Length: 307
Image (cartoon, rainbow, N blue to C red; front, top):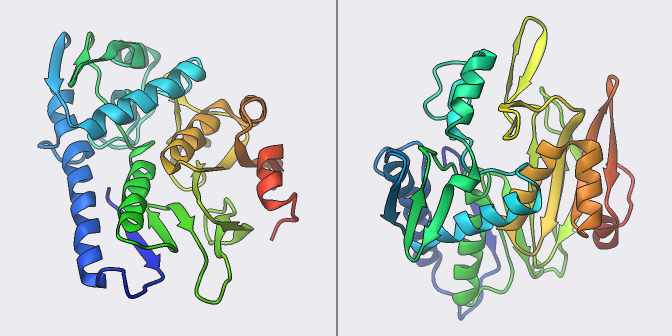
């Protein structure tokens, strides 16, 4: 995934040796990379992406699971979440085949939008099919999926307390040996330094943050975010700087943080509130930031002042 991973856990007599656990975890990550990476042409999903419209291909269960998860998020948000935006990401210079950061013309966007849309994907048994030349990009949910897979393996090996982090998505279970909780910082959206906005304690929960404060470019004084709205084909232009979602499923938290980032501060907060999603929003207010959280988030962690 072009990033790092960290696993911390409490060892005891019945848990396999560290070296064995590490081998098993890295096998899981290698399998996910082989299936889902958009940065290698031989991955299962890139082979599918290269197929023309009207094609079907047998796919591993993990890919079908993520397509189904993406479909649920897309259906529930009227298309604000979409797994097929890779051609748009490449067009704007943010994708794996991007040719540098550019501001495309309206005609180029409209042309590329012909190859975008979750509605063009369907699952037929063990096959993934497409009725347009869409390209699937799992970067909005693959890390959360990987965190859940690694966590499940640790639990199957008898690990009762752990913190798993993959590309910044996290999940924690249990307590440290001294009885204290696993504590995680929600980062403040600043370009030049890393500062904690809130500290939360996790037990049996995954957490994901999406933001536009590091991955962007500027042209003629205008800032273009790497978060694209699938319905317009263009970067988001609202005041939401970052959003953090906490959920029992890290995969779902990962997808929801992207979805809420696309919706923005008003629609995103309404969406999360209506669905009882634990979410924490950081919003541009002039030269400052303000934070808002849902009732579900406050029930888990308290309304709490910013750190």
